[in-house]
Image (cartoon, rainbow, N blue to C red; front, side, top):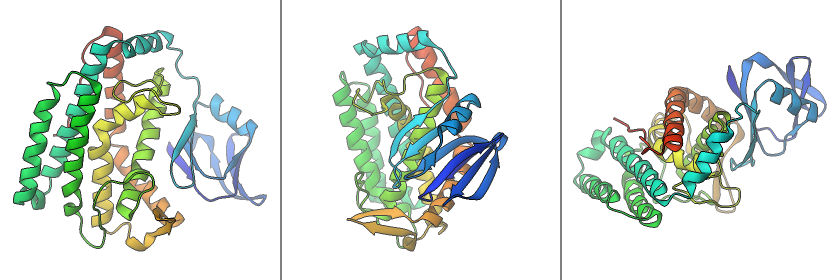
Length: 318
């Protein structure tokens, strides 16, 4: 079972018996038996027939949609769980200020810890005095999280720690990649482009897993409700940014799997070209396969915390 990534503009997806046909200008360019596919990710202007959509839903295969530049748009998810009671509990916990504050503390505690542990894996960082000072400051912020009594103040700790983290993130890299600060919309350099693309893929992964377990991915606790924002998926992703995506980006840059000339610049933003994008998908799959069961385990812990009203135990990188 594997993910099918479709990025070439102008493709269409049709079904024939129990196979998916990928067409371009009316001609079949690839065929896939349905048993080989776990999930489909569609980027940009790619058509899919209603018969194919119905077929995918019947087969329990989710289909995630992105812009051509990798911005997550939404997902088509089979009905895998009718867990109405979980959703009712999820909504009730959202209205519980104490629960929201406690789960937000847990998530941000995990995120900052995982950033620190990730940096400590690189001798170049922990031997540098200025970097050691920044890690020391991050540890102090980490201690301060537990004393906060509002979501806003907890997010303030997260912002400070992550800003410090990214100040030394680029020092891990070898070669020509430059990185001054995190820029989201748009990504203003190749490193930010890779980070944004990776986070978008990971968020869609978590979104699908949440939906499959019966959660409402749009109702989170750390990230407030906002139109079309998958807040709960973003909540859980905070724990896994450094272990999954940041480590992936360092690997593909330092091993020169992706190079500077693999990007195009458009209106001051940088995006991967089509062929390097396929390379990125392969590298992403290799890393994320080691974390899928861990993420599922965390979602089951989240489910238990919501139903029982317990404090959520996040993932800690060691």
